[in-house]
Each structure stands twice: as C-alpha cells, then as structure tokens.
Amino acid sequence: MIRGYKFEPGADFTGADLGSIRAFNADLQGANFSNARLAGVDLRNANLQVAMLRNADLRGANLTDANLQGANLTNTNLTNTNLQGANLKGAKFKGVVIGAMNRNADLRGANLTDANLDGVISYKFEPGDDLTGANFGEANLTGANLTGANLTDANLTDANLTDANLTDANLQGANLRGANLRDANLQGANLKGADLNGANLRGANLSGANLKGFDLRGANLQGADLTYANLEGADLRSASLNAPWYNTCTKLSGANLSGANLSGANLSKYNSNGVVLLNGANLTGANLTDANLTGANLTGANLIRAGLRRANLTGAYLSAAYEVVPDPRPGEDVPRNRRYKHVRVTPYADLTDANLTDANLTDANLTGANLTGANLTGANLTGANLTGALLLNTNLKVASLKVAYLKGEGALLKAPIVYRP
Image 1 (spheres, helix red, strand yellow):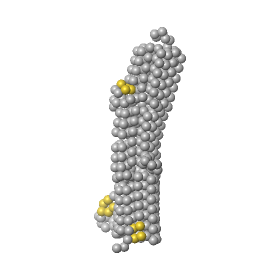
Image 2 (cartoon, one colour):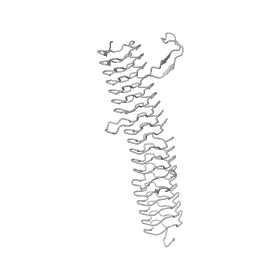
Image 3 (cartoon, one colour):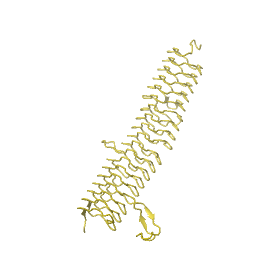
Image 4 (spheres, rainbow, N blue to C red):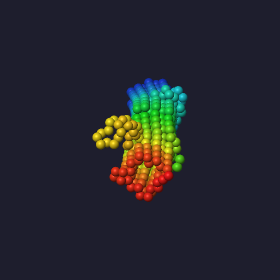
C-alpha cells in the first residue's frame, strides 16, 4: 500500500495525487491513472501495459525501461519525463505535451513502433533534446515538431513524418527507410549517413541539404525542394522526380547532381527552372520526356537509352569530359597525344521532338540516336558522331556540323532542314 492505494494490475488511481512516489518494478498492467498527479514519480521498469494515463501529469517522472505498450497517454504531460528505453509500442499520444523549450522528455532508445503521435503538442525542441537511438519504427509522427532534436542513429523505418518539422534536427545515421516525409521540413537538418532508401520525400524541403553519396534508390522526390542541394554521387536509381501537377515541380535550381546515378529515374515533365549540374551523371534509361533542362550542365553525362522526347535542352551543355588520349592503336585514326572529348554522351538516346536550340554537343556520341523532329537550331555538333542516327525532319539551321561523323552504318537524313550559307 502506498498512500492508501494498492499497486496491482487493474488498480484504479483516477484523480489520485501520487507525486514523487517510488514504485519501480511495479506491475500496474491495465491500471487507470486518468487525471492523476504523477509528477516526479519513480516507475522505472514498471509494467504499465495498456494502462490508462489520460490527462495524467507525468512531469519529471522516471519511466526508464517501463513497459507502456498500448498505453493511452492522450493529453498527458510528459515534460522532462525520462522515457529512456521505455516500450511505447502502439501507445496513443494524441494531445501529449512532450516538452517545452529546454524541458523535454528523454526518449533515448525508446521503442515507439506503431505509436500514434498525431497531434503531439511538442512546442519547440531545442538542439540539446536527446532522442539518440530511439525506435520510432512505423510510428505516426504526423505534424510533429522535432526542431533541433537529436535523432542520431534513431530508427524511423516506415515512420509517418508527414508535415513534420525537422529543421536543424540531427539525423546522423538515422534509419529512414520507407519513411513518409511528405511535405516535411528538413532544412538545415544533418542527414550524414542517414538511410533514405525508398523514402517518400514528395514536397519535402531539402533546400541546401548535403546529400552527397546518398542512397535514394526508389525515393519519391516529386515536388521536393532541392534548391542548391548537394547530390553529388548520390544513388537516385528509379527515383521519381517528375512533377506533372501544377505548382508541385521538384526544385533543383543550383543543385549539384555531378556523378549521380539516375538510371531509370523518372524526370518526365520536370522543369529545371534554373541552372542544374548534371555533369558526369548516369542517366541511363532515365525518363526525361517533356523535361525542361534549359541551360543544364550535362557534360560527360551518360544518357544511353534515355528518353528525352520533347525535352527542352536549350543552351544545355552535353559535350563529354576531356581525356588525354595515349598513342593510337594500329589502324586507329586518332592523332598522337591529341586531347579530345571522350565520346560517351548519348548513344541510342530518344531525342524525338527535343528542343536542342544552341545546345553544345561538341564531340557528342549520338550513335543511333533518334532525333526525329528535333530542333537543333544553332547547336554545336562539331566532331559529333551521328552514325546511324535518325534525323527525320530535324531542324539543323545554323547548326555547326564541322568534322561531324555521318558515315558508317549510315545516318538517315530524310528531309532534314539543314542551313547552307
């Protein structure tokens, strides 16, 4: 008996004043603590499975390693509560006050798998908030305010973080595989070593984010803000960056995608709306149908079998990277020690109806490329290889074809519009 109450499974503590009591290891499964005052209580390792804690005051309570699986924490005040290692699987958190300013709950290592944190009143998390290693797998964190929170090595696999505010949060090494980050704010967040494989980042704010070398295979980045983000060497295979909806265009202005792997990525109807660095990027088989890549830097990019139908590449740089060529092999028609542009840019690319006005295609490999109806007005095709290319009704007005290769298997030049001075 403690303060006249028997601490046992199913006990009724409705409205009780139990502040500062010590009941660690207690078995309180299914107990009712509705409207109870539990500020400063010691319930370490206690069994509170499916307990009713609605409207309870748990400020400063110690619930380290407690079992709160399936507990109802609706409207509970958890300010400065220690939940380190606690099991909160399937717990309900609607209206919970987790922390205010510098007084915040300690959830290090807590298990919040399947927990519903929708509607959590978390105020502003400060940079010192420690959620290191917390398990939020499949948890519902819709609209949660995690500004500045420390989520280092946290497990957020398949968690719902829709509309969550993660500004300046530390997500170093966090597992965000399959997480729903739709419309989440990740501006200034530290994502070093985080796993975003298969994450839904549609509409997310990642402006200025450092995603160098990131694994973003299969990620949904439709409508995401990647303005000035560093995606150098990132793996974006089969990622979706297309944005067919009005005002939901993925923003890549100033983004660095140098050396990124975009094989099979969907960028159809994409609008660059600014300078995009795609030099050295692997765009093998990528879908760039109707994409607007005006002024994009695609130097040395691999566009083999990429779909560029009706794409706008006005003023784009598509020439390949420079290499120093060694002595020519026997029978090879290459001058000794000549610097030349390595031809590996766009063989077999589908450039049907593409707008390549003023594009720089110097020494580009357009072997077998489909340029039917393409607009190459003013394009620089000096030294380009067009062997076997389809140039049906292609517009080559004012285009430079100096030293261009139109031989071999035979380029089809049916009714091309070619400028003749």
